[in-house]
Amino acid sequence: MSNFIVSARKYRPQRFQDVVGQGHVAGTLKNALASGHVAHAFLFTGPRGVGKTTCARILAKILNCENRTPEYEACNECSSCKSFNESASFNIIELDAASNNSVEHIRALTEQVRFQPQQGKYKVFIIDEVHMLSNQAFNAFLKTLEEPPPYAIFILATTEKHKIIPTILSRCQIFDFRRITVADTVAHLKSICQQENIEAEEDALHIIAQKADGALRDALSIFDRITSGAGKKITYDAVIENLNVLDYDYFFQITDALLAEDAASLMNRFDEILRKGFDPEVFILGLAEHLRNVLVCKDKATLGLLEVGENLRERYRAQAALAPASFLLTSLNLCNDCDINFKMARHKRLHVEMALLKMCHIGRAVKSADLEKKNA
Image 1 (cartoon, rainbow, N blue to C red):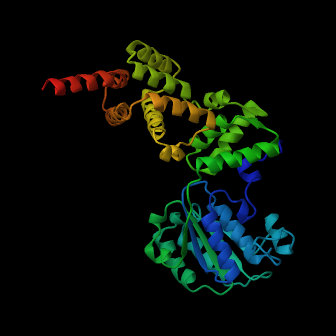
Image 2 (tube, helix red, strand yellow):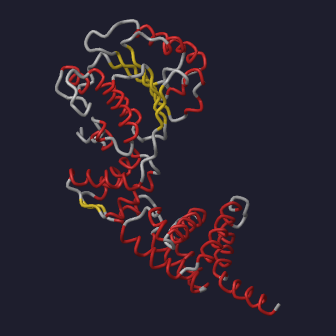
């Protein structure tokens, strides 16, 4: 059997300083540890794959560490840290609320709370996907959560805070986890590539980060999928083929055809995209995002909003210099209308082609409108 370990597990952070994109949470928790003002109940909330359970485990590990570092990280050398690393700690209890969501499961948990830790200061209970608990289970949990013994600490994690009853929320310190930015994801993937001796093109890593949509765990899963096929060299072409992503080149060519009012080239490029198996709706959404990126490049003040590699950034700048803002805004509006009405259209291809042809004639429409004003 293979000894392969997925990257999300292999590179799971063991210290707060290694957690990607959640510096505000790590900083606050470290300050609480430094001052000794550690709450008895925490709620970690945010999108999937951003580090909620990871931070819960790190905090639980530090709380029972016998020799904390000056930076308030776990030492990884004491008996408590070693037992935690070997998944043999009796002081840290993890409960999956998705499959343990009844009153009986909570009663079993509260029974465990009654017993003091045999070793270490705290008994830490990590309840994942806590929003899955039933209302009866929440109510059974209330008293224990409000007045636990001094050695008990609860860390609740959820992706859907709005499903948790207010009486539970009022008893917890709430930490909101952010989506991981594309730049942070790319930087993390680069560090993994260095450790694994993998050569990766920056544009390829940007595509992986964008596809992950703010979830680092998703980015690492995609990364594993790519490396299993591409080996030690990850190219942009391999990534877009594996993820079935439409190449940026098509959007640049389509936009060039729109600016040149070349309807024939425009229709041929769109036909080529459809013959490659891409959905018309996916194309129109991709074109809208491309036009938005070109518009962002019109002003130096908004260049930071462009989440692409340096090579693509230069191409966007070059195209932005040729495209009038009025053309981009009108085209974006047509893309938006096309997307809104796409599901109601019976002839999907014709629906998108009509939108493209309207964009192709924006310049003529503007010129004729100016002539009418002069003649009026």
